[in-house]
Image 1 (spheres, helix red, strand yellow):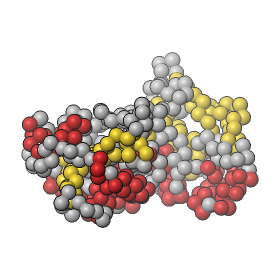
Image 2 (image 1 turned 180 degrees about the vertical axis):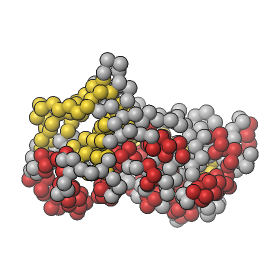
Image 3 (image 1 turned 30 degrees about the horizontal axis):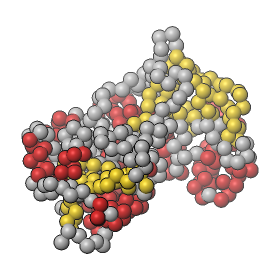
Image 4 (image 1 turned 60 degrees about the vertical axis):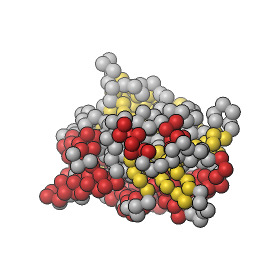
Length: 457
């Protein structure tokens, strides 16, 4: 019976879903899957890209864990693709590879002042507050007034984490160093800016509602942003999600704090629409001093056009939440413009000739870009796996497909890899750290400590 030896690079939802779908698919061959992850722990952005106060989304980990705990997928954590293991290694030991490395860098925002001191990429901030082991343990939270650029879920997460009182995060898995830094933050006002109107936002109703549920934080919206054109009215009438978002925003307009009227809360979160980023203003020492934007207006077709009116708000920090961007992988074609691996329905294409690259596949955000929610990753993986199965005649023919070869290779290179049993040890350790404090867990942040615990060393 033919056997497929498959490598999957990336142990987030995209990689785990692809493995699960392939193992459950009807096929005429046996399957053996090894999952490689550069971090010592699995689950990717569910662990390191979702705000700590989102336990409902983090519940996805339970489903992912059930897949891994079935025992038919091997996990090699703390393994860096490109150095610890290469594409040539994969060709020597597997029939094919699926890259599911996601998108973890910030998209660029090409306006003057983006590189000023105090101008931050949202992805970096998310990695910090989620305890990613490869980012600094400290963060400069010195601003009283902050601008967040973007109208997606990440922008709302960043704004919520900045404005929420840190003691309200204690029941979550927020790392201790993050809680302590947030507790010392002097922030009073967080401003969210989006270039289009309330009927064209990218965030979800759930994310928006959560903002209004924060304790001792006033929500501030502005009447001038709700002079809807017909396209906006049509969107509200025809789309239930847009309708709910409008309902929430309209309820905030009725609050005493609407239009920046003073409220009793110690912190305020402002939502500004029709605001196209124009410039991040720096002072003489190169530090963020203000944010400038151009006021836009509806164009009648669901978009916006500039009005030429420039506004300015004094702030001491700016967070750019304008999207994620993929990273190139050694030996694999990469589209620098879109931040993805060029592909046709998951089958990787050579960038120069647009011809098929045998044995190489992609799924998740590195395949289609950072769009859609985690649930969309399943259908994405199904498409890739379907082509992988149908391409049986074009698979690589490995020199040594034995399952013993990979542990021996990693050991010979001095790689301290972690496995599924190691993740269980780390998981239990973090939960035990949190129990005396009534917390879900306390994340272990330093990479070496994660590896030591996982390897029981």
